[in-house]
Amino acid sequence: MDKFVIEGGHKLSGRVKISGAKNSALALMPATLLNNGINEFSNIPKVNDIYTMIKLLKHLGVEATFQNNRLKLDTSNVTNQDAPYEHVKKMRASVYVLGPLLAKYGYSKVSMPGGCAWGPRPINLHLEAMEKLGATIILDGGNIIAKAKRLHGANINFEVSSVGATGNTIMAAVLAKGESKIQNAAMEPEITNLCEFLIDMGARIDGVGTSTILIDGVDDLSSTNGEIIGDRIEAGTLLIAGALTKSKIEIEYLNIEHIDIVLSKLKDSGAKISINNNVIEVDSSNIEPKAVDVTTAIYPGFPTDMQAQWIAYMALANGTATVTDTIYTDRFSHVPELIRLGASIERVNNMAIVRGVKRLEGAKVMSTDLRASASLVLGGLAAEGTTEVLRIYHLDRGYEKIEDKLTQLGAKIERVSTNEF
Ligand code: EPU
Image (cartoon, rainbow, N blue to C red; front, side, top):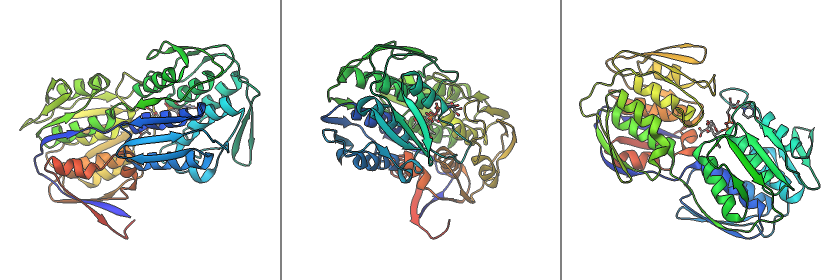
């Protein structure tokens, strides 16, 4: 198992390029199950969740070749419609194979994802939508078995806006007979990326990027190529690294409009932001960050996937900030660990009250999820002395070579193999 050893307190400088969005790739890759042919993607990040999805697709019979961020998926010979527990327990996004397999092959069997480190994270909305599209669903031995001769169009109005349920439902409805209307659909850029990929395959989708998606089902879809959008969460995380260490850095990032809210909160905190084509500069040289409250919300609101990093930033702000998570109300495992670095944070239900302190001090910390780990790395970069972040396999699930990018920016961070857990 690896850990990061970070010598904190160094200023950062220079420019890094943002990788492709893993949450986009995780939706587009299973979408290829809807066709029979060769699909090629560019800008796929080399992170462990992508390798897990590749393993699952191979298990279904897909041939995969992954080189230099380019992924080729050949879906000509899908032989199996069963996503077993060994895959799903590693990564909840495995549930994304449910909709496309059901729509294309009339059957899919997907192990129920269990709880996760920060709450139950149900999939009821995915299943209810499949039933509305005409599937019969049974739960058997911890598996969801979904069957339908051919799905039919339906009106689906989600009671909660869900990225995964929207993606799964769109992938099912594009091959259903007739028209479907999805209301309260997720508007996240990863869903837009998915819709555009499906349209390239031949799907008929209207309302892309809005909360009402209209789909006119087709009989067949053909293979195509797709490009993964930039990772808005990696972009936001690195911009906070610059602001938190009172540095001036630049990121090269293609989809600047996707992080408007993060840029606007950074500006509110006193960071100077300038944008030049595809480059964003954050300049916080010797700027004491002001405390700025955030409340997470569905897109275009402040992303829950940036909540932990914002708490790390506010730990050194001037004043008291509240950070409230309305999407995942229990996603705060980073709080006690940031307190180990000297932060002053009180948690009240789904809100963290962060009282800015003058300095953080290096310590050994560990985390139980991806974004929490990112916040601990940020804390370590700003803390005086040495911070060890244990269990960084969580980070490896979703950040492509984060230590290389931070090193490129002048951080002192090293990956070390360890027996410590
Ligand atoms: N929800 C339900 N029932 C469902 C599905 C969701 O009640 O059937 C609720 C959830 O409990 C939550 C809300 O709906 O309160 C939103 O969850 P959503 O379904 O949108 O989350 P997800 O699709 O499982 C994706 C990202 C997450 C990100 C969330 C929210 C992927 C692979 N994962 O998860 O990313 O936090 O959307 O934006 O796209 C991460 O990258 O660290 C990560 C966890």
